Image (cartoon, rainbow, N blue to C red; front, side, top):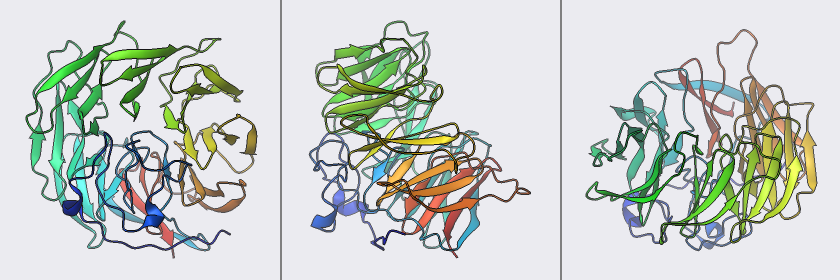
Length: 403
């Protein structure tokens, strides 16, 4: 079993409001040990910022790498599950953690802030959506034609102007950056001013009747978004499409969310392939066959790409696509999106959670939900300070931790 670091550091949002870079995240680094990205690159306005112990959004950062180099999960020798708080609705989004506050949202219309020290609900509000914390504000809910944000401490609500749109915004993920709050609907890509709520249209999307990626990725002023069977790279500064990639054999690209690392964009297609695309040119570097049509999204950490699909987990070399390891025996059901934290790959299914050595694929531990239980895990896990936070279809958020 890997020896992992134990870190408990209080984070202070107020001291970090000036963090720069288009996709700088809330929070400050406390030492040089946390200054790197953990995937072979340094912090350079590329969407990771200085994470510390925070987990501010789905995919950890705006590049959707799903990799957190600092967060630690349980040792796993003896695990326990306990309920933290109720949620409304069976569906839910991956939770976020900033400054020791857990932000959760279900699909039935409420978002909550939960203090992890006192284990009390700090505030809750109407509207639902994937929580994304940036500069002290929790974004996530969108409804009809407006974006909503909530003060992370008080829950005070901010609301944008309503866009002039036929289809509206739907329940889409706002992407807060120094340029503004980017929202990509089926119809257009919008940019909202976080101070005034005003907006402008970055780019109109052709053929708006077709689907788009739920969670676009942003890296170095470029937004990567799947639109039906195409992947577009959009320059947010010039409002132009830099390039468009389409798989040679077809296959939809909207069920998997793109991840960007070290100059490559990784994305799974519905025809059963995992693709690596040059982020500058849009040329395909490699493609790997998978067992089935893939609806999951890849994670990228330390030069390895991870992908969960029905009854198996794949780990391939990020540069070449060569197989690093594969697990089929211990995976039951269809995994949620994999996350990697401090050298461990966490795989969640409706039946439980498994933790693998991210480099070798060795199973470190697993937690299996008892057969008689009503618990059905249905969100990617969020990892922080020895604990795993995960939502369940029984309308409850749970903590998995060492007994």
